[in-house]
Image 1 (cartoon, rainbow, N blue to C red):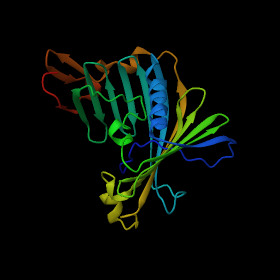
Image 2 (cartoon, rainbow, N blue to C red; image 1 turned 90 degrees about the vertical axis):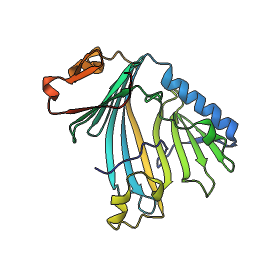
Image 3 (cartoon, rainbow, N blue to C red; image 1 turned 30 degrees about the vertical axis):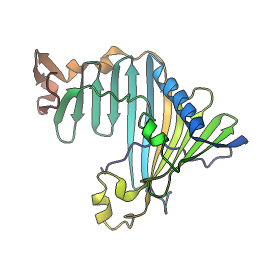
Length: 248
């Protein structure tokens, strides 16, 4: 499976009634980003699904690749599955399982909040010169469009946000194809996308803030630890362990 870039943008093809539209500036965007951060980070438990799709800008209806993801968060514990890869972690360390390669990668937990879809929208990005923002307030949803200057790898980001929950329901990122990591195989096969734009779209569903079973976050299903020594459980005996961080 080709790499699908986890980008977060909205794409609207439905008949939502626009109540108001305003030309937003960067300060209004920053406020929206803060609201989304709060929606995803103030929950003790949160789970949701994401379907990522990949297409050319010239043929948005022709899906070239897709991958399904599941996210489960409980305080400082998380379990993320995207395609054949799982990540199980807590405040101490994380375990990544690559089922296709039979590899178990153990590393310190990342500072990235995997439950927050816009964690990558940092202050440097939002302070970029030439950035323009529009916000459409709709009956149940809010559409935020971020347009980037021509020199940037991104053309635009669109986020569709539920006004009631603050959660993103759909997302779309329009990005230069040459800027996508791991897309060389795709270009070599003669798709004609090289030098053009690609669409990475995400559809978020099945949000829940209900209690999640502790078994979801149980790393002992995959490995055991004796001081600094890690061993796989019998079920994963064909996996090879790699240690990615010193002093775990």
